[in-house]
Length: 206
Ligand code: GAR
Image 1 (cartoon, rainbow, N blue to C red):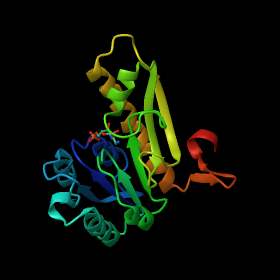
Image 2 (cartoon, rainbow, N blue to C red):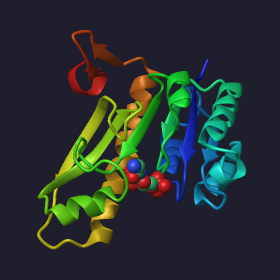
Image 3 (cartoon, helix red, strand yellow):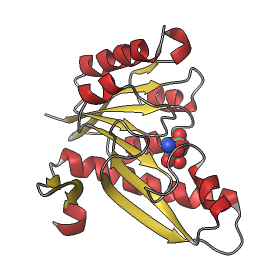
Image 4 (cartoon, rainbow, N blue to C red):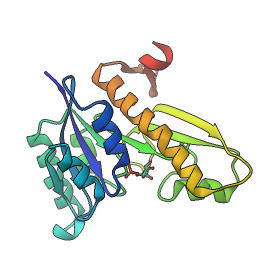
């Protein structure tokens, strides 16, 4: 049986597209795409791929807990094994995180724990870093604070053209996020019992 993935988005959905292009098929199936915004371009990408897409905008619910309960029910109805935050720009409530404990991953455009939260690339450039990168991590109740699954870095040129840097970040994300999902689907991400923050991945250390 296929490993079932639910993807949450808020906007453009290029990471969703990378998952659809490289993973969606026999062994891994994207079973639904949920957006926190009505006009997210990623919704069209999902529908073009024949995948069910639904909007869970906070404004349509009484509060965040109610929205997240409805979103959780929708994912559970689709029997999602894994929830992938692919540019999902909202905090999820504690009950949602517990409901899918250890089964939510996020891609973030910085080398965590540096520059969590919004505008991570701008934060890094304002700080004047010489190296930046991408992190795929499990989601816990903090902001971008769960255990790291994969990270990749690159050196910044002196000339800081933000568009070129965003492009480079995206290129890495589009490789790293599908790789993390396929490692999890294959059962190749395990935790060191002596340090539950330390994920062993098939790609890194067997
Ligand atoms: C990605 O760069 C992702 O890392 C970032 O939003 C972008 C979404 O792009 N996520 C965060 O900053 C989460 N804190 P996409 O919609 O084209 O995939």
